[in-house]
Length: 387
Image 1 (cartoon, rainbow, N blue to C red):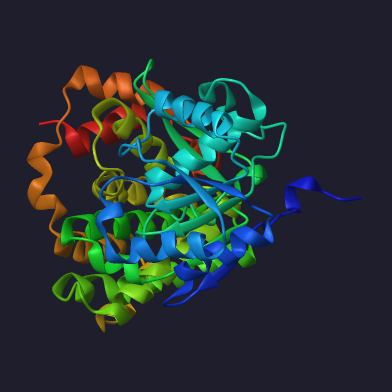
Image 2 (cartoon, rainbow, N blue to C red):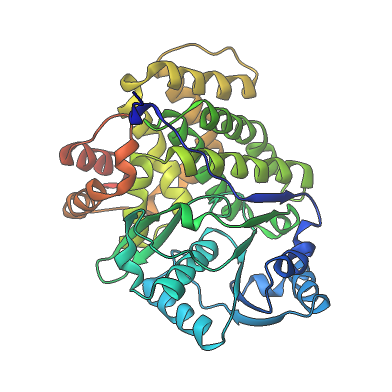
């Protein structure tokens, strides 16, 4: 008899990677029979030289474009509803997302509403999407969210001041054009934030209760690439080789967490992003060490493997145990500089308790290696953010 608890699935989009891959977007849109693209992006991206190559690719392939750039960091529910209305009004047939996680999540949300006709907040949770979204092509411009390969979309429910997670195989993009060139436009602050998001994706996917041999290989690969390349890249933000490795780290982490899901770090970071609008990757980085310590005794062998990967990248010998894990995580997180800016991220005790209640409801908790209580989450918020 088949035991469903022992089964694992693995879904992924088609991926075209390498320098210049973004210039193929018009060709791939044509493959889907696209005649009128709904291009979701943000205003800053449109100033970049490489963005003109995307527009040229559409022009050369005879494709009309309707531009939607009203997307903020931590995309809002009302932006999604506005975008879906414009998609339908312009009779578009394909969505192309050019941007970081916020843009790609917004594009997915627009696709959901365009074909399912409900309010975006009504699709929160797992497998709540009945109708397929329009064909979706992604060009990621950061190396963090991995939204270009995942079945997640994270949207800010503005009425409740919290982020919601929408998870469905229907949200896996059709094609991801993974080109490292856009990373050359990232500043150091953004590179830190998105890379810490990738590190957290890799770690949480690896210790997830839904992990498998397939997701583990991608998760460890992502952790290793971040450990080897992040700190050198922060000293040389124009080094395309280092940036390419960080882009591949994001890709591997995405393939891991899209199929193994995440955990308590993301559950708590989602709430912080919705309530305080704190940068998602920074929240992950600030919470990561404390929550790994909280989870350690649930799967010590896996956490010791993480320690080994981080230590090897630093050229030191790894030792098992929680102290070693804390030391290795601290070494990479502190070098990013985010702990020096901790004073700008603070919560009151009442806010810690309120946010803990929301965090407990987040779907990412379902695969955390230890099921947290409300008081556990309150203590973790206070330890990190109460001043």
